[in-house]
Image (cartoon, rainbow, N blue to C red; front, side, top):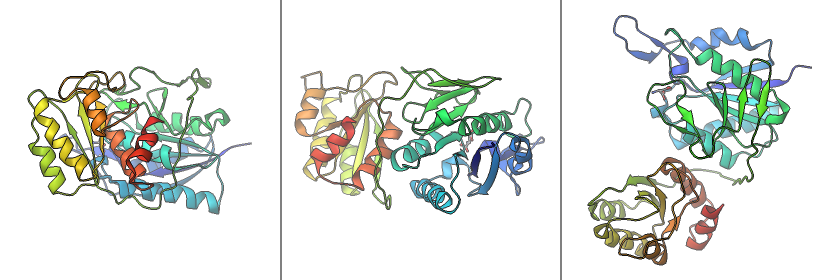
Length: 324
Ligand code: ASP
């Protein structure tokens, strides 16, 4: 029997066309994927919703929350086996991770996109959509968290990141690799995510910003963030989780104002830890109350801090959430 798969289009290059005269890639009046949906109807009983038609740099956490609610409402109306969300690749990992943290439905959830617009030579959109519907319709895809499927690879939302500006193999999971592959004959999983976490989120109104540390960084931006009354900040710190000494007073100022500071590493492999005891070293930062995240990249730690702040503002509870 065919599985029921809900497809939600949100925009991105996968839904765009290239103007052959100017080379400019933009969303058109009609989503080319809608016309191509008949190609996937042999794979599953597909229902399509055009949620938005946005380039993904226009996607906000409010849009992510709307996608989550849409999935839940549709499931209440007409339960399905899996859902595929098409999305621009620039912020795809953020939406995928937000859904990973907030949806608990017993269905497979796949996010996909494309690096080439629909009328470019070698367009990968329809191919990725077909692969994603196949993955969503596969019963083994359930209980693995949100999956990101492009270029014949299945990645977990938690680990995947966009690594290349234009290459079709841009989505990679540094350090961990994909959890499965899409072959011509079937869907093969070779790894199993070992943990999952989910939070009931009614809104995502907390303002959390993200900055990157660099050699010689001082506290000026950190002071400005305190004045701007952000609810939280993620810093992509140096190496194992260290900051230049001149940045430390800014971090202390934020913590003194009860603004949580979450540290990730600007290295894309490894986990930030409190190892170094010198001024600005991870040990000192941790003693001050800085929260070390568990291997997330900066953009995903920001999503997680927004979600965490919707649950609690208690520093100890926030720290526990980031240990998961
Ligand atoms: N800039 C595009 C977007 O994210 C890139 C893409 O979809 O591949 O919307």
